Length: 306
Image (cartoon, rainbow, N blue to C red):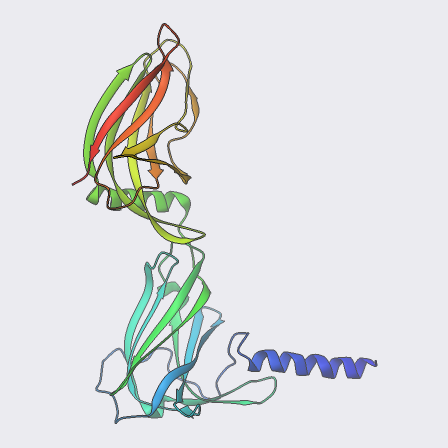
């Protein structure tokens, strides 16, 4: 197979990929204002738009250009006036950007694939500054559009947007501030052997893992080594007991972990437990340290949430 034939095939393949919408959208033929008017107007006369056929974006330097294309019940491209509610959220549905704007039929412009010249139809386009996006809990976000006409509300979204994530320290600070507003104060201290352990507060928080967003019981604990020697401290044996059920700590863990604690050292942090949010009365139970007969000390704390 000759080089010219290979090059021709490569161009055709790239053209098909672009046409299928697997890459970022091309530039429209017309230049639009960088930001639509934020003044909400009444939608134009009734239109036949049934769905948002395409909703995507492309990054251009410090700007992000979004566009959508409408489709009628027959599968043909169409245009329509209406009101747009646009947002970008992180993987915990925290909003990093939002705007509301009106769309008129004459705001739609012709779009085509630059490589092939294939017409895409008329699209509505708007642009936002990257600097206007807040930080998120994750590196990836989802852009969402809700377009309301005189007769319908059309929605679409595009995932895997690149957003700037918070640093770990920033997330911990934000989470602590949120938790302090909803947590129940416990304030129960137990001292046995060389350890003094205080359960300070408890409450439910939301965390995201590979399965999605879930609720966890967070228990804030302060521990101190009152002895004269280094002592081994671990949270691995801590469980929550509610009725006849026992709940282990989450693999997400927390900020309070295993350590060899020197005399006089105090540390504090939290543990996460996979407890249903419907549970409000429970006990935190664990063993820590040994008595003179080398039996483990048992710690039990009653936790009742508001």
